Length: 43
Ligand SMILES: [Zn+2]
Image (cartoon, rainbow, N blue to C red; front, side):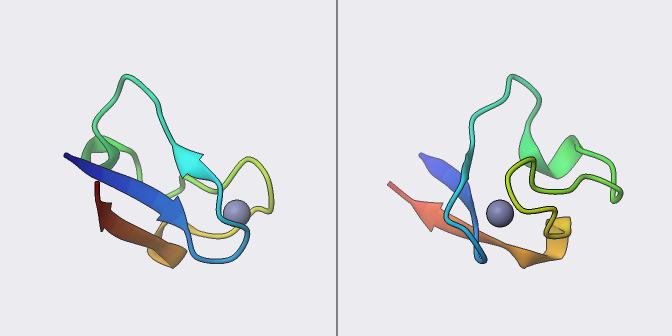
């Protein structure tokens, strides 16, 4: 399973919408980092 983790603050995306389907204007709710700052982590 793949999770997406904010590379700035470590917040983990855990929404119902697949991360890749989120709009490019998605930002981290914790620190406001852009979608491009997220890292794909296999867990
Ligand atoms: Zn963040």
